[in-house]
Length: 470
Ligand code: HEC
Ligand code: HEC
Image (cartoon, rainbow, N blue to C red; front, side, top):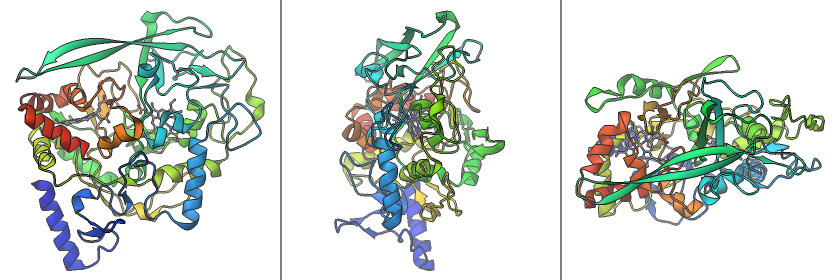
């Protein structure tokens, strides 16, 4: 096994150098007294041994003292429901237009809230737990609406429109005859606040929230390693060729690693407050409704969250622990891991990466040296891949074409049901379980999908058991 071989090499090097103090060579003592094996350490010194509803929402072990105080403050700013009141910087400033009422309304327990497209058949009642992007068929934005449909509004204001989702189900069979079904979403929007938009001129693209597992590590990635991966990860025999996402923000070029299109190079705190919640900041001082024909006149309320407060939210997300793997020694999980390699999943869902040596810097300049020099197991190459026509959303984002998506990191995926109570996967949640998520892989993922589909049922089950151990 390539991965075990790598551990053996690391362990030997550490023993020789006796210098790998941060992570320990290959054995660390778990808080509960048992020894952890390297396979369990998802994110080096940021690994937490937690498999409850708090699994994504627990600080890394190095978060103590003043850092813990700021973490807790960031956690509250992230979770506490906001209202339209202007008095309290902790809980005010919502709207006039918004989608959710707090970061946590969409990222419940730092995870993936059950999407309203399934819970309510479209826009949610009171808040929506997904983002709806709208674009003209020529790729431009609607002047009256902007890029995101704000389908919620405070009292006295009209939401921009309301989303309706329906799903078409089709049945298929694996090579051994076992049946499975896939659902394809269809969306419409009604109750436009201004000009109605002809359905023929409208592209609706719905994204469900991402899990916040390992956000700090993702921002601390060694981007040279990703660059090398992109150069090497060319497997013509499997039709795979990952592409690094280069994005331009504030006149500088960055490697994009965040978001489903790898179109973000930071944790989007300012954007989230502004666009998702309607909370203004120094970076985005105008309400998203500013300049729209629905002249609301809310901008005189001024700045609703300070950069210092937003930095604490940045800190909170960056300093979250990553849950350790579970059941790594079970027979099915070991067999499933071998099957994961057999189906060439690892060619995109890269098991092992490293964080860089220079400390990541948060919004307000705080450095996080704990995130440097770590061996991590995100199960992603953070590259863009052509995933075929079925997942094509007909909109280019950042440097990604409409049919390209960032390989979703799989760490923590086995705990999503515990944390969020559902097993919807993929960028729009159309996969209702892990098997469906795999069977949607096409384009560069087609070979993997076929290798999985041709396995015996017990081998497929083992692969799923392995995913559930992540
Ligand atoms: C209305 C729902 C909603 C709200 C409210 C919301 N988000 Fe998100 N968030 C999403 C969705 C959907 C995505 C995935 C976008 C995509 O496809 O890339 C996302 C993605 C992210 C990501 C990228 C995650 C990754 O793995 O790369 C970060 C970071 C993030 N959100 C932070 C925040 C913060 C901070 C707030 C509060 C200020 C917030 N979000 C509020 C829906 C929401
Ligand atoms: C060509 C690269 C590639 C290969 C090979 C690949 N994947 Fe993926 N995988 C992706 C991308 C890109 C996405 C995101 C697609 C989307 O959201 O529309 C994804 C999404 C997923 C998801 C959903 C994650 C989530 O949280 O929503 C799972 C589960 C998954 N892959 C498992 C696998 C397994 C198991 C294999 C092997 C059988 C595999 N993948 C092979 C690129 C790949």
